[in-house]
Image (cartoon, rainbow, N blue to C red; front, side):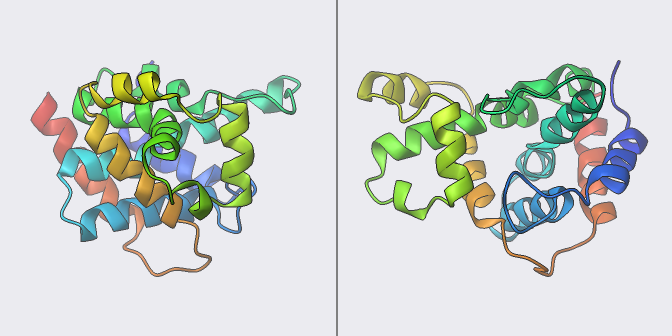
Length: 186
């Protein structure tokens, strides 16, 4: 079943106030900050939409965890979780950066000597659960993938989007961008 714009709005309204993965911001604050950073850097509408939706899988995993016993100390694979719900309405230019943003962290740790030291403690912990730092061959293979550069940009915005009470445009502003991308894709 595809998530409509109204469904996405409802998910953020109902569950966006939950804390984001051990950080001092909520799911909604993190999504808005990531999208805002993308917009400020002049990213395409598709990449701004990906930035807003990149961690929607965390919210969907929270819903699943309410009906099942969560497994502590495991990777929830959130980067893949929302894709089936979004793929019929959004292009690869949105879906692939979402799908690749976890591997982008693993790649950046391999290719940027200073990157690892910028990660929050929660990101360091999730990096371990997500398979750790890429080796040189894995990093090179990642960099050859379509939308890898967009995923790297998204990852850097993701890492910066953890500031409590940061001023951003509201959810409706970014949902209008998602709607534009959906219309162009239809």
